[in-house]
Image 1 (tube, rainbow, N blue to C red):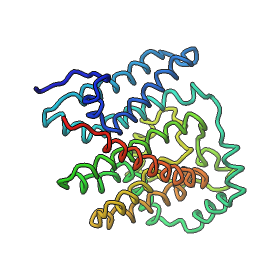
Image 2: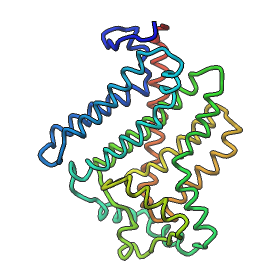
Image 3: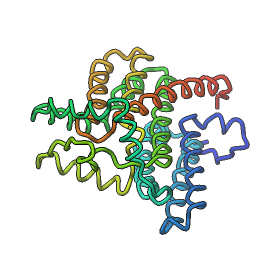
Length: 299
């Protein structure tokens, strides 16, 4: 049978839906509710609801299919879903919660020495170091592939499935944070912080412009998604003893975290919150996946 119609009442079907897919479905259901609740503030709000519903439908249908092509899509579907959900969040965050909390984050940063860290970053600024920081910041988008491909090549798929759940939780809970505490980041308050951003040369500025165009109106500062995913990459590599991947992933992850401060895209409190969130995702994800395996029903 090439296809099993979605039936969430069936235990066998529900066991086919991976925890990473349940996390995706629950997030999208929540955002559909948000779109409905704040529809007066959101122009063309049904389209945002339809977009999240389409993700639910695609994930549900893929979970019921058995072909090798669909299985491959399911394994790597985050490459499609995460950018789509980020784009949708970018158009929703400031309409749902039209307040910026930069003043509060800046006050916390001053209290914990974050502004001093940004100023120290300015003191060590060099053209070569700036180029490396920009490369690391852009490399974040490909960082999870390092442990992901290594685990995918193993005969046992459960390590890969668990890692996928951790990354899915990391991204989705980061988006939730954007809704709860929208902020623009220190780059928009150079005079208040007292530290300007490093300039982007023509060769890399186009990449930055493309990424900012994708973000739209997103207030994607707190918590730092770069810090969350980078910390989870290190955790996944070490937990699964993926030493070859770790040789590249660990230094690149540290560079990604440092680049967010060096380039003045995040307050120090954003980075710390992102790392705390990574720890929460690691605990929740490993517990959730263990429970899933205990209740798993083989097709």
